[in-house]
Length: 493
Ligand code: ADP
Image (cartoon, rainbow, N blue to C red; front, top):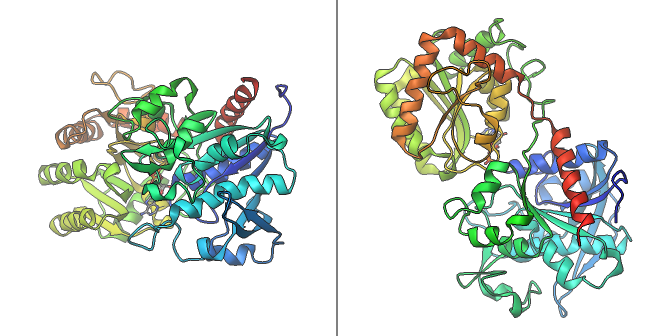
């Protein structure tokens, strides 16, 4: 049993890490959390694939061979490349056939059909690395479906190994809508015995569901916000897995992500045209003017500018946003700037809005990190009408930039934004606007209410901006909560 101040050994397994390879919020956490844990004095190793697209990073690192057996008759030789990058102690698992290809999860259109076996090698390879190097982890911290087999292998394949005798496993959910579903013929290649193919473990309507199995076998589970954790146990918010979340509710926690203020602060941001520490000192207005000119919007300082940066995916609520914007744009003098990539149909709808409203609407299709900073700094309000939101980062960035978030009351959005109440009486604490029902009408009504406050109550708007810019979601706090959770796992049987 660990004493309360003994530094922990943590093996963190994730399929993407910011600064190496990133497709979403998982990557941000897989970098910031281990970095912070290490700063707090813990020993953390991050295991991720040695993707071909980052070969220049790892090709000079030593490459001891690593032999992985997913079942009793298969054998795969990989290499484990260990090195340091961004302050992280990394083990990159190399296998040309699995990880040398151009995509991470898909070929640009379809997921790779052998994803189960690719990521099973990440999970088992990470544990094998511990065995080969006699590195005894206190905690194996698996992330999302790609790492979800790790708790299973730990409990079922390596149960009797002394090295893992004290080890506990945590599975973190960054987005439980992605579950690693696959045909059941993968059971045997992955070393999952038939006895575990039932609805209480890996089976999901006749299919294999890797995330579900991970939820069954991990010692504890956490979601990336308390709000999302509480929704996962409901039929509406459980992504089809509510029964297993309810079953494991005693071990299900919510820990809100932190924000990397080193990259996201208007006071120091080198990517914005004018830095600022107060919403009304001129810098923010300057950023707005720059963006209006850059995107071909009329350079009107007093016209409210609503912005959005997002994956174009159903999760993000574009089915509400697009009809609401058609209505609002018709009779309100307001500007909109949207940056996004993803679903083609959503993009086509946004291009149509763009054409119709010309100097008042700008849609930039693509992924552009630098532009996303300029948009955050320029906007008056940030629109985030998500259907579900495990944590969400952009509303947190928006707070820091004094760009008031208008969000749906869901998941991490509910945990991070304090809505202005209907009597407009909480001006000292309110940081944004919120609506409940996932309908275009509810969103439209809240946008109109927000625009009225912007026009008619400038002092209230300014005080909300000040409140917003004071909010802090530091990684230190989040990492300390993870440490408490790890310790509670180690002290229970
Ligand atoms: P999710 O992980 O569900 O996509 P989050 O809000 O948690 O949503 O994180 C999204 C991250 O990706 C943010 O940092 C956001 O700024 C960034 N992002 C999303 N789309 C784009 C884009 N088109 N261009 C630049 N950055 C983007």
